[in-house]
Image (cartoon, rainbow, N blue to C red):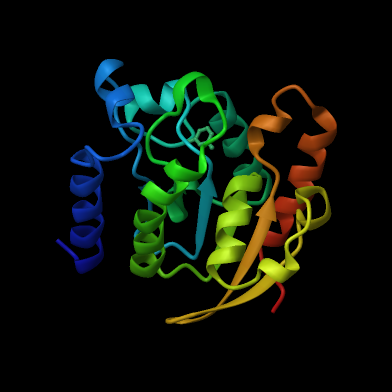
Length: 199
Ligand code: URA
């Protein structure tokens, strides 16, 4: 097993055993799974969503429900193969009734996301929705460039990591496009930037 696969497996084991997580009891009560992440361990692009929904918690796979169907369409529109990217969320367990994640939940799972980024070392981080945008911009010390997602979507922000310079690209959450064709058109346009992010 490669180093990356082994390190990612350790994260999975730790999240499975994370009894102190505010969402652990929900997981046990509902007999569902945490969603760690899926895709290439050498991905150029890492997509970061918010938290698993019903289908994701039932299967343990990220973006496999209605929002995932939109994400798949967006990837196709940008000529990106889903198996070449890595897809994960900040929060690894499903919040009850798909409510927004709470600060405590983001704090509990954030360190696992940080480790996933360090292991995979993507050159592009595409955030899906305002929670991951906020987390990632702050993580890389770019909080002074934070604005509303309507002002930031589709733009590219330079960040410095311990493995070199990367691009952060905030995007709307695909779930917003389920019933809103205007947002879907915006997402399709924004996804084009992922084909060759400007330096
Ligand atoms: N919404 C998310 O943010 N993540 C998923 O995995 C599914 C829906």
